Image (cartoon, rainbow, N blue to C red; front, side, top):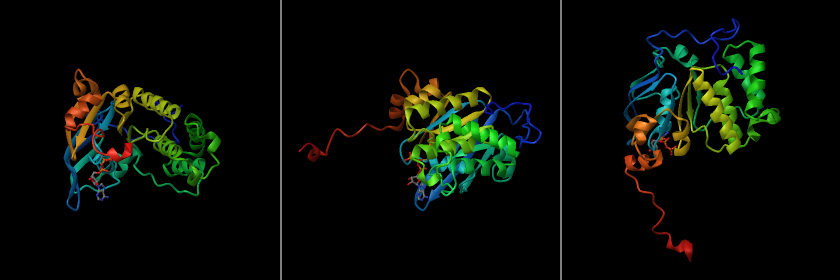
Length: 274
Ligand SMILES: Nc1ncnc2c1ncn2[C@@H]1O[C@H](COP(=O)(O)OP(=O)(O)OP(=O)(O)O)[C@@H](O)[C@H]1O
């Protein structure tokens, strides 16, 4: 499979630009990122450093600013202030160089609905500058591994939510990026597909790729991630290796403690029992 980035790149395929030793240690560097929507401050001078080779989880309560942060980190949303660098390349000043290294699964992925999954991947592969034979073999492999092969002739408009997630992930992987930024990649996928995605991402990291993903599933983050950042009200309130952040407790317990929340649902709604 093409996921582990071979140093022997085919001359015809679009190869990631070389990364200097100095820039190779930090996959994603976010400094002072800020975004407001009217009165709402979604991201409040947020700083985050994702080490190269890490499997990095971004967690936080609903409305904490995760999606807004990830959207700005990949160039889908322009920040009001702050700076983003991908392996040392400034996302806004050197967008092409930075984005070549990046694979993205955005929130609420909008797709060209009248294409099939195969057509979408083929189109994106050619657009990325891969040669036709490489595109064809990668598309076959991705459809097969992500269990979309039987649906390859189905129009995207007829894909289920989980299938859309998987074709989005395939699109993010197709060009062999160095850093994957994924907004809730495990949301709405069945347990078998979740296990497949987990394995693919673990292989990607093992072969010196880096992953940053958001999730609400604490046991999953705890199981797969090397690092985690807890975000609330647009700020990082805890960050580090998983063991450092969770301490002696589970990540879920540490999370509840950090965000100062208490699990509700025990009071009120008495009419439900009537
Ligand atoms: N386009 C927008 N217009 C107005 N407000 C927005 C917009 N996008 C996000 N917000 C607000 O910014 C804040 C952060 O939202 P964001 O979607 O980034 O949070 P999140 O952590 O991803 O939440 P969730 O876990 O529920 O997906 C929220 O208060 C949200 O209402």
